[in-house]
Image (tube, rainbow, N blue to C red):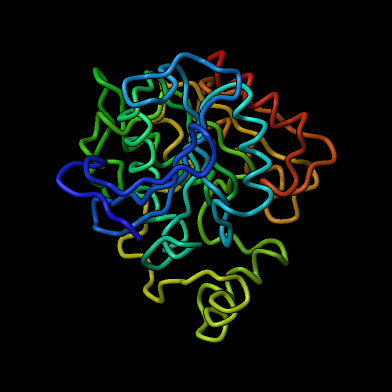
Length: 297
């Protein structure tokens, strides 16, 4: 895979995959290669300085065991690209990216690299949309990487992290969390108990590697990162949308309600009747509504 040298994107090897689309390898601030794809807006919006749409870009953060090439992620890209340019990437330990998954901790650096790439392509506005684990990452990213003129309460951050290309270059202008957990170590449902087995047991990590093509770090969190519910109050003034299905088998409705309450009126909450979990359960109608919200806020 190619890597980025000298600056976040100058000198990277980029090849076209469709007219106007690009695939590249980003480099995170802790040195990992992250595969990423840029898809231009299909409505033909005016290009920016490097060929990107100068308006909104949506950066998609997939769920645990996903990747940028998974069908559900590509389906979301197809819908979002009708409203804005879209960047997808594979988190560390997933797909063609390097390293091992830390299940939501250091993944903030991967998202920051993708957001910074969007800004380097000339996008004035970047919206992050995360699903499940990706939802927890976009919430923490929104708290850690703040817009010019604002500053987070760093005393509340379990581990402040450097931004890819600078904290201000990697901030999101709006945040969407779909099927995100509110708190860490939740084991209240059978799917989450199975997930904890995959993450914490040697045999489970082998299943993750060879069954789900996900390489998982065996180290425990130290320190424990800021939880999603602790991150939410720090996202303002950026707009925040929380989306959750009432049939989610992983996280029941107390999770999105807890997140919305923590925002103290600074978040919009959509509870979707009949919806299951994350990108696999998000239909075209919901994805279109999310895209419309992203470009309107």
